[in-house]
Image (cartoon, rainbow, N blue to C red):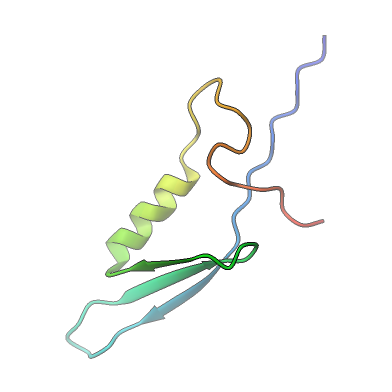
Amino acid sequence: MTPEPTPRRYHAYLLRLWQETPDRPWRASLQEAVTDQRHGFADLDRLLAFLQDETRSPPPGAPPGLRGGADPPS
């Protein structure tokens, strides 16, 4: 029996970074390329936490696509 291929996971975002004043932290937003959904972040630590969560491996036995990644465009 041939094992099933592992589904590829892919995320594409438009990243925006800005600083309102020089003494304020950098803020960020991500816009999903496929759905246009936007995610806002008050600082870079929250942005990185989001990306780490998005790229964390799903639990064993989880259905494909659990974390929302889609195949990259061909």
